[in-house]
Image (cartoon, rainbow, N blue to C red; front, side, top):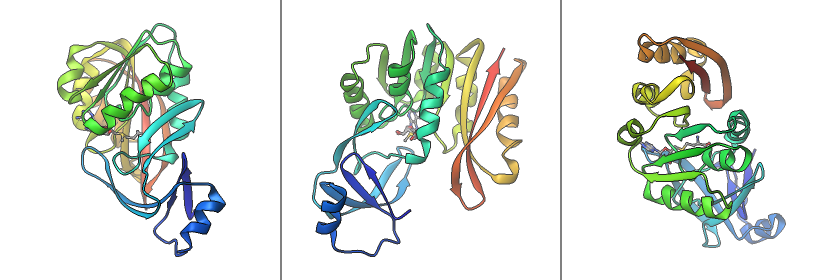
Amino acid sequence: MKYKKIGDILILDSSYGNDDYLNLSKKHNVKTIMKIGHIQGTKREPVYKILFGSETETINKENGCLFKLDLAKVMWSKGNNNERLRIAKLVEDGETVIDMFAGIGYFSIPIGVHSNAENVYAIEINPNSYHYLCENIKLNRIDNITPILGDCMQVTPQYKADRIVMGYVKTTHHYLKVAIDSLNKGGILHYHETVPEKLMDTRPIERIVAQAGNRDVEILKVNRIKKYAPGVEHVVIDARID
Ligand SMILES: C[S@@+](CC[C@H](N)C(=O)[O-])C[C@H]1O[C@@H](n2cnc3c(N)ncnc32)[C@H](O)[C@@H]1O
């Protein structure tokens, strides 16, 4: 794929050579054209270049949800769209959910829109992402999400939940113990990891089991989200912890 459209902004991939950006902007009906290199650091901030226009804030519609975001400040992964909806559809009426790495509400917003959760504690460390998380709660008229600006390592232990989403792929396993300790009996964990293909069915599960101590772990699903890098998969493990 040479490009993707996020809201009214066109993102070109690095191989794109066309420099007739005015024409391209008209063809795709966009206000801005950008290239986004890698996503850096714990706060998952994009390294970007603006090729046409100047505005980098947009509203992206996906799965019946509105996501306002600034593509110069926060990331958007199109490849995670099915997973964002899958999780929302799993949430049962009255559940309390913790979204440990909430970002702009990648998972919390679809949960707020598509389920009847009692409450979603959405924890985010990056002030830019937190700003858009709050905006998106308003934009989608959701009243059951509690946005929290902070480090989930410190904040999570203050709550108990029926379901915990760990939608982060850098050192996520360091947060497993804290997550499991906050899960109610029979609660469900959605644990993300980027893992070499051949370890996909073993390493993430072993890490969960190791951190669960003497609590029983039932693996409900190993879901492959996307290829992350050559030979590396982004997977999510659904696990019930008794
Ligand atoms: C960008 S999201 C991952 C993308 C998402 N899974 C999706 O569907 O596109 C990960 C978020 O976790 C946040 N984060 C990283 N470490 C954190 C921590 N210790 N506590 C809370 N949030 C954290 C980052 O700032 C980032 O916004």
